[in-house]
Image (tube, chains in turn red, yellow):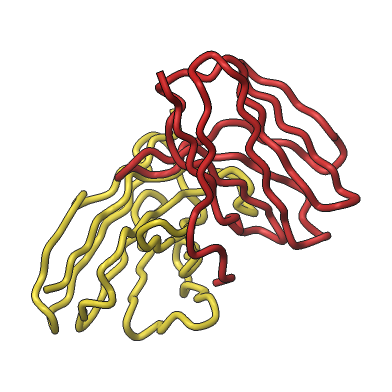
Length: 110
Length: 116
């Protein structure tokens, strides 16, 4: 498998603030991207996805932005809540498999 | 819908023994299942892709004789860690793809393996 980050960066936000989590992907051929949330000791949970023919997609409280020029994805969470505390991973799809990014720990302070 | 289960959720085994982990798609048929390994504070790394009725495709650096994968039906895939060693201790996660090509993947809850 491809090697990704050894130490996860941490983003600390105050409850009610907006969070922005960033991800750089590596493969120009990837045409589908997904954000996952992983709570401690659990499997990844789908949050939102976006195809390469789009640059923005909105869900409930979440927005994903895609910049193909610089191979960058971001996940915006509006009005962050304590329940949003988790590790967030982006994933790209070069071919028929998922390649996960390094992940970001989101800590929400009450 | 699209629920994936794993069994066991955690297991402790002695060094040198083998451990089998099951992955089941409960409410859909999975043409493809994927096995990932995740070490603490790290990302998920794909180990292998299995298609029902055929041999698994292993990622570079993953020993196929050590990590035996069987995908005998459209709802069940198993991963057997043979002759386990402490360095095999990890969180093993499976996912199942409902559509051909694996774009949509539904993840299981993971299995924590500890080898003593």
